[in-house]
Amino acid sequence: MVSTRTAGVGLAATVGFYAWLNARSEFASTAKTACHLLNQTFPDLVSFPGQNNPGKCHEGSAQYGIDINHWAVGSQQNATCSIEPQTPDDVSKIVKGGGHAFNRGFSSTTGIQISMARFNTASYNQASNTVTAGTGMTWDQLYAILEPLEVMVTGGRIPGVGISGLSLGGGYSWQTNQFGLTIDTIVAFDIVLPTGKFVHVTNDTQADIFFALKGGLNNFGVVTSITYEAHPQTLVYAGAITYTTNDAIDQLALAVEHFDLHNTDLKAQMVPIYIYAGQLSAELVIIYDAPTPPSGVFDAFFNIPFATSNVNTRHFAEFLTTTFGKGDLGLSPLQSALGVIPIVNYTVPVLTEIVNQVVTTGTSLTEKFSGLPVVVSLTVEPFTNPFAHSRGGAYPHPSSRQVTPSSPWIAVQANFDEERQSIMIDGIKTMSKAIQAKAVEVGQSRWDDLLYPNYALADTPLNLMYGDNVARLNNIAKKVDPHGVMKLSGGFKFG
Image 1 (cartoon, rainbow, N blue to C red):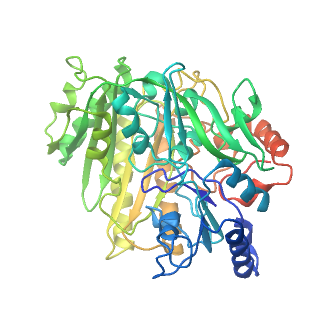
Image 2: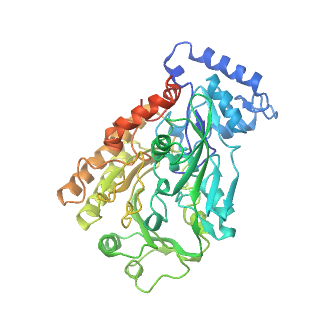
Image 3: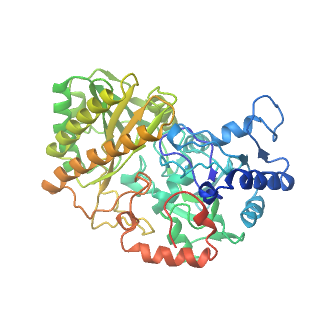
């Protein structure tokens, strides 16, 4: 299994190996043998579980704990060993021998965890106005490097998210209104194919693979770096406003509807988050991609009585860390489940149903999980024509049908439990069905609208995420991976 070191929502870049061993009775001994064979070839890169050994790549090294760590415990498993390749050649040798993921097994394994943490450098090419970043980085690490250069890329919205997982799944950004999804701004991928061959992939040199990597997730090889278009970055006017009274939350729905239906300023973006944690509250994250917004852009939100606000002019990276922290709501350990609902516009009837479902689900699960802190939230994502810059790719996002991925989320402060996870997933499905039914009723969704892969539940059929692209993606997977190496990994599979 391949991951980056991450600790946030939308976890990690993921490519996995040896997951098939989980279903075999000889799993434990086979995985252990494979780990020790890798240790013979890469004595400085492999780590094993344990406690007290300070060695960098033996039993008990700190590296192992970091490599398998996931912010959401439902995504984490104890690997037999972990390995941190340093170069594409290392990755090639491992492949020949053998991220945004909330679903168990998608970014973790009880076999061999391959961490891309050492692919952690980035560079800006002023001549081509592009940024190339190793897939072991998180977006906040990359932003910290780019901001002094006064440039930015269209990337993740929360600290701790690995660049590869979001980039290979689609990528909604704080700059999506202006520049599109992350996959619309990718220029090139460096990848080790399942055969072990290293390839620099562009639309001109490897059109099929380039298409597949733009939303096709971890099916076509191990991506070691990605090159993105860059754009200028100034200070931003941004932060979060919280609302805690029912009257304020009702007024918020009216303001959100008006903004979503009438905003034409692509530098302005806002994301409401409805949260039930014993009682209902709402948090509104706003950003204007300039130091000062024009008069009136966000006035309606400040005219509603609010409990707190930290909105001001600041650096982009500071906005992320100040507003979101680690993104974990202070709950650790954390078991969670995430889903997705396709919505065109967030009108008052849709938002009213969202609030109803958040409260109903939160109340029900608080009773079922007596004694455990429960959080139920739904993030509303009213982008302004997010597919207007679409350049195609595996994840279909045509400008003719501009749906946005609202995301219901359930979290419990507890270690992982299979029965509890099943209840949480059922809760996500019930919420999602009820909210989409209301959206369909009022003309703001269709039952055949495609779901965003980075948020989709593990049992989501491929055709509900990729539509007519499934056949092409199956053919590409068979061509680049004739022996099915990438099928040994977790996640959604083609071929």
